[in-house]
Image 1: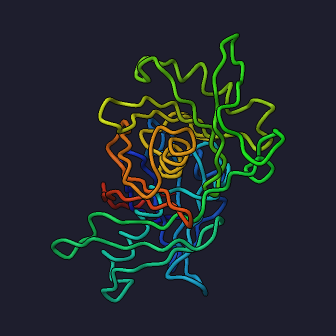
Image 2: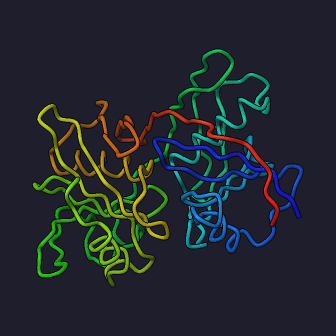
Length: 281
């Protein structure tokens, strides 16, 4: 069986995209594991299925590199918007809607020379109630809560952007952190019943933020859109940034801009097509 695919990335957060309007992808959980492997597959952070939707321009489903299904991917949804526009699925419209397991997301596209370059995504309201994130903590919010990992105390702020995030502001250079060691200990900590994505963040002198991310089901990725949104929210909640202002987030794969308002969180960034092809499975 042959499947056509497009490999795309947002700030280095790369997925293999399958257009399911004219083909069926069998067993996406197993396929995500197979194709994400860089030596024996294509190499990616997972796969994303783009399917017809009765309520939006398209539906997206995300399967991480370990085969688990994700609810939302901020970098992935921008790439879906690019795929739809660049392939004539929006009839030239630059406002696009995508149905996800975290609800319908609206994208405002910036187009140059007939191709989508960047998108501003309305990511929806940040969820702060611990029971809804979920995180096993009492109270209305989890801001600056101490958590001991390997006998070291980290202060965590927890946010859901449709998937759970644990944001940790640190003094040491995030570039020196051993994420392969500490990332899984956050991801699988009993405090997080559905596992968690963890962002480690430096505040830079100009007020921008530098982060590295350990994603549940994928390990360290070069970028995380929902994680960048969670970092922007956490920065505002802890007095490191301000609402209704653009916050620049520096990731390993590039920069994203986040704006946290009382109603929603906006994320702006690029999307890039790497290649198209056909694979036999």
